[in-house]
Structures are given as C-alpha cells and as structure tokens.
Picture 1 (tube, one colour):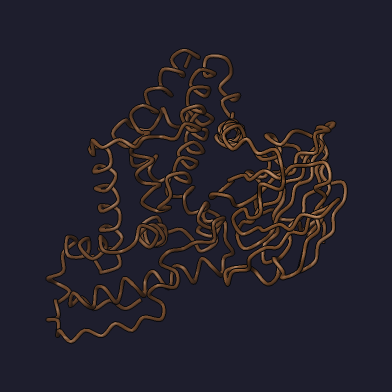
Picture 2 (cartoon, chains in turn orange, red; picture 1 turned 90 degrees about the horizontal axis):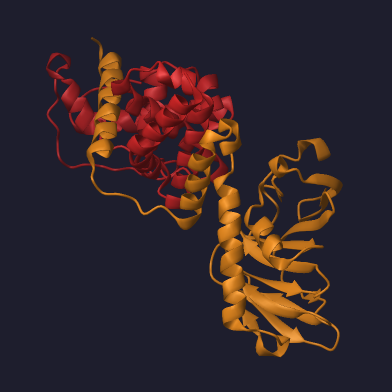
Amino acid sequence: MNIDEMIAEALEEEFEERVQQCCSDASKHKFSLAYRLWEYRALKNLGKNRRDSHWTLRRARHIVTAAIIAASSLFLGITAYAAIAIIGRFSFEEKKEYSKMFIESLSSDKTEIEEYYGLPEEDGWEVTYFYADEQQTLINYELGDKKVTFSQEVIREHTHHINTEKAAIEPISLYKENDGFVLDFGTGGCSLYWIYDGYLFELFSNFNKKDTASLAYFTKIVDFQNFF
Amino acid sequence: MSDSSDNRLIKELYETHKEMMFKIALGILHNASDAEDVVQDAFLWIINNLEKISQIPRNKRAVYFANIIEHLSLNILKKRRVHPTEDIDEHKELRSDISVEKISEDEITIEDIKQVIRTMSEIDRLILRLYLFEKRSYKEIADIAGIFEGNARIKVYRARKRLAKLLRERGIDYEY
C-alpha cells in the first residue's frame, strides 16, 4: 500500500471512529426552541404527508423571533421617541416632522457591496422593481397583497432622515442586541432598519412589525444575476 | 413499505441519529444554530429518500448520515463565507528547532497517519476524504461545497499541503 492509499484509509477509519464516538457520547445538546417546534411539527406531520414535513426550521424561528420581539416591545413599553437617543450603533436627533439618524461607523463596515442580500425566493417573494449598484440596492417585492421595499447599503458617514412624525422608534434585536429599530406607523405598515454583515438594511412593509422583523431575520445572500 | 412502517422507520432513524448528526455538524460549523439547520436539512433529505436509506445496512447508517451532514455543512460554510482554516496556516511559517527522526516508508502505520489527521480541522479532513478516499473530482467537490471548481482545487491543494507539513513534523515524508 503506498502512502496515498494509507492516508485514504486512515482518513476513512478516523471518520468512522469519530462517528462512533459521537454515537456513544452520552452528552446531549439542548436544541433551541425553534428547532423543537420544527421537530414537533415535522414528526407529527409524518402521518399525513411526508413531503409536507418541509415546514422549515426557518419558519419555526420566524415564530420564535416574532414572539421575542413582541415580548421585548411589551417589556420596554416604549411609546415616545423622545425616550430614545441611542439604539446600538444608531443615534437620533429628533426634529418636528422627521428625525436625523446617525450610525457609528466601524472598521468592519463594508465600503462597497460585496454580496447582495434579498428576501428568500423560495418563500414566493416576487421582484417587481430592482436597482443595484456598488453602494446600494433598492428592491420592491410582492407576495399576494404584501408589499415590501428592501434596501441594502454601505454604511456612510452622512445623516439619514427618517420619518418619525407619526411613528415611535422601537429597538429590536435581530442577530444581536439592539442591532436595529422599527418605526411602526400605526396604519398597518412599518419601516425596519438594521445593521448586519457590515451593511445597513431597511425593510419598508405594508404589514405588521412582527412579520416584518421575521422577514428581516430571514433575508439572505441572493444571486441576482438575472437582474444585472 | 407501508406508510406506518415508513413513519416508524423515520422516527427510529431520527431518535437514534439526531445527536450524532448535530455533533458532526457542530464540529465543522462551530455554531449550534447552523448545526441545527444542517440536521434539519439532512432529515428532510432522509424523509424524501427513505427507500434508498432502508437498503443501507443498519450498522452503516450512522456513517452514511454523518457523510450527508458533512456535505451539507460544507455548503453552509460557503454561504457563511467562513473557512476557519483557510488563511490561518497559509502564511504561517512554523519553524521547529526539534529535529525529527525520519520514519521509513516500511515503518509507517495507519495509526501514525491517523494521529496526524486527528490534529487537522474537520474541514481539512473532509476535503481530503472526498479527494483521496472517495476519489471525487474537483468538480464533484465543488458541487458538494457549492463553490467553483478552481476554488475546490485550491482547497484540496492547501489541505494536502497542511497534511504534508504535519506528516513531515512526525518524520513522515509525503510529496503531494
């Protein structure tokens, strides 16, 4: 047996040993609430239609995330913008009809868009308008009567103006504490801003903030080749 | 197979292998949330390929599922754009002042090599296993990992380079 063959055999034996070790390891992982929710539904639905078991973990996390945001909002009881000056990296200066928003810059922020994010296509969101350059994107999506404007942009040192005339700013925590905020317009729609992967994102929707926040959580890198 | 026996099999497979699959995924991804995603994806695959799975001997199933988990994990890594070993050793010039006695090829054992392999990252072990044991082409490795073929070549090359270095430190000459 030459050394390459020995290495190949060693690799396979090591892998099998590792698998056996994992099988015999008595320690158990405490699966997340979202996972256990998916597991419950997946195993319960086995009897009906196996292929329906594709109720994804991502949708389970959607429900858990929405519940967390609802609980956070109740806990914080925020009703007035004036009570908030800083949320995570965001800071605000209140004006009469709008607010100025500033974002603390970090060295890890991207200077141009390296990968384009969007809504998960597999959930049925259809792109009805698309614009993208190296600094920002602006995409309109529709799904039934739901409409969303999604934006990704590099974080720049300029002032953002956001409409807070009839909306209170509420902090949210999508991936880490206070990494975003939401403006609930009280008319059924909202605007959500968050920072992730060195970019600033915005979701402007015509539906409630819980669902919008869940949608924000599930945005992902998308191949927009057809649109370039 | 009837539906009820299918369901029993799925539940049995799930209960038996869930923890192992999570641990294998965690070893590669180092992130519990991503590891849970991979376990879920793997089980959805199992549910939809039950006929194929039922033909695998019971004592081979754990390794089979672990293989699926590793392939899915590789794909997740690409999406995360994280490869913990990618740039760690690339520019490191480790010089050892300890002179290592060479082992002749006749004296090398599988166990010697396994000891070296155990010090490598799970990702490197997986890449090498795909290339050297499963004899996958660069294109197949690229498809599994969700990367370009050129990128797969680089990953194989770097993994073999790291292995060669570790083997040399043990006195085993390995040309790659």
